[in-house]
Every structure is written in C-alpha cells, then in structure tokens.
Image 1 (cartoon, helix red, strand yellow):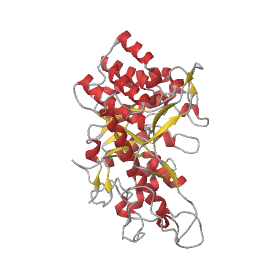
Image 2 (cartoon, rainbow, N blue to C red):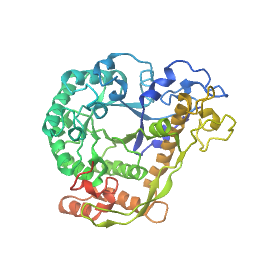
Image 3 (cartoon, one colour):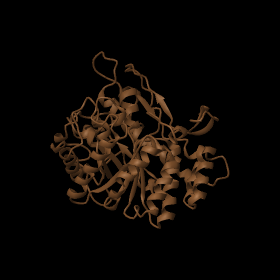
Image 4 (tube, rainbow, N blue to C red):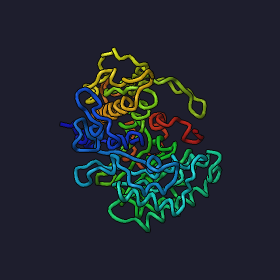
Length: 441
C-alpha cells in the first residue's frame, strides 16, 4: 500500500515537487524490466499515480520549459507518455501546477520568445494536463542576462508580459486556474512589476512569487497588505513561491497561510516548489535524509555593513554517496525511505561493463528516495508552526520570524512599517538583507 503524503500536508504550506524531464518520462518509457531483485518496476516510481506501491504526493509542478524541446513551443503539441499525461484527474488526485517555462527558455541558447503564438501554445498545454498554470511572464533575471531580447530592457519585459497575460485572459478555456506572477530582484523592481500586472488579479485565481524578492518576507507582507486594501485579493485562491527548499522558510509560509486566513476570513492554499531532490540525486549522487537537522549559519554583514551574528537554523540532511562501482557492496541504503528499504547500495551502480559511473536507473531510484525524504523533512519542519514560542524545539531565528509574520497581519499603517523594520533581521534572513534596498544577483 502506497504511503499517502497528502493528509500529512493538511493545513500546512504544501511542497510541490518540480519534476525534471529525465524523471517525468521514465515511468512510462522503454521497459527496463525489474529494477530491483524484489521485482520493483519503473511504473512504481510514478508518485502521482494511485497505483504506486511506494508513495504518492498531493502536488507537483512541471514546467513547459522542461517539456518543450530546445525552447520550441510547438513541441508542446506532441503527446508524450509521462507522469502528467498519464495522471488521473479529478477529486482526490494530485494537483499539478504548470509553470510557463520562461525562466528556462528565455536565454541566448534557445529560440523561445514570448509572443502571442508561444503564449498560446503554453496555454493549450496547460489546459490539457494541468490544474493550475503560472501565467506567462518575462523573469526579472532575463534583463540581467546578455544575449536575449530583454537584456537591460525591463519595460519591454513588462510590455511582453502584459500582452501574453491578455492572451491567457481572453483565450483560456476549461477549468484551468491561472496565477499571476509578481517578481523582481530589488524592492523597486518588484513594486513596479506588481503595479504593472496587478489588474490581472481581477480575473486570475492566484499569485506566483518569483525573483529574489520572493524570499524577503517584509516585501511579501507589504505587497499582500497593499493588494488586500486595494481589493485585488478577492479572487486569490493560491499563493505559490517558486524554487525554494528552505525548511525555515516553509515554517514561515505556513504561518503566512494562517495569517491570511485571519485577514481574508477564508482559507487559501500556500505552496512552494523545488527541483533539489532531482538535482542532488541525478547530478551529484547525493541522498537526502527524511529528518531535518539543526544547522549553524555563518556570521555575515547586511547591505549597510552591519554585522549579522551566526544563528541556528534548520537544514536538510544530505549525504554524498560513492560514485565508484563495487558490486560486492551489500551495504544498506543510509536513509529510511520506501525505496531505500528495498535496495542495497550496489543496486544504484552499474552492474554490467567496466564503467564506474552510476547508471540511469540508479540515479532515478535515488531521485525517488530524495523526493520522499525532502517531503517528510519539510512536513516535520512545518509542524513547528504549531509549537509554542517557549522552549528550544524551534531555532530562535525561525521562531522570531514565524511570530513576526503572524503579528504583521494584525497591524497597519505606521505600526506595520515599524514592525517590519524592527523584525527586519528575521523577516529578511531568507533572502539576505541586500534585497531591501540593494541588488542580489
């Protein structure tokens, strides 16, 4: 019986696995036969399928930039057998968020340009296979990368973003729900982008947060309060933060979710995604443990040169695994995950030929273990949102940040600004103090 992770995320900010292309297609690709001596086959690695004997997750993210080939949006029309296209849709099935793919594809090596045609291709793909879609946008990183259409042209990026969002607004069909992206590398950039696209929240269903400022909770709180006062949160059902595996930030996002319930009088979903489990496994042969570890951050300085002392926080337990081939190695897998209980270390390494590299099956088995392990670590960390402020169960900086998030939604005007300034070290620690006034690349 598969382990159902969905009930464990109830009332918490939810993690959505950002599935990579090599894993997305593997469960329905060429038949590898039994992957392990116990008879486990590749279909079992599909954690979106109810029939998986390992585990299932409540949410996942897949990017159009991962699905399309060489930045060619026309390839999104091709039917490919993968975890998303084979997913059962409906009540009780995992929620799939479709990312617009612009972060991966707007770069000098790809031909992708955000036009009405490419936007329409992304929209049609999302409608076919996704429940939620990240509305099209030119990421703030694009005007910092030489060689692409938007280099040093933020106004052009905003204009193309607004044109593409108009395509989504006018041509959306079916039940797809769309999130509008707010982003920027500095506070000024982020505020300008928000002003430029906020009117789309009048038809959209949620907010996606991208850019460096998504990690600065002072900016997030200010923006949400301003949008609420102006009536732009009335249709918002979900807020999604792109690309983070920070356990401490996850705790604060759960606090944010609950604070928004108090502000709006209704529940909304708060979620976040990361590709960390896949990248650590597939590229670096590193395993993630299912339990958070306490970590000590190094001392640093903020943008004004003021010292910020070291502090204790939460971290992911990561173990580097051997790369060499040792067929006699009968050691157990170091972490207790569903697939980890079924294999020995030699199962992850090439069994035929003289190559010392891991084979594809080994890396994908490790990906599966990492997805489950990070999910479980994040669930344990998130539960700290329910612990009292007293005691040592929560690192003090995360406890202070959690409290600051909750209190910020009970204040307004000058009191709110004073609170954000007073709590700046805690609310800004996930992005670094540089994001308040300076630039982080």
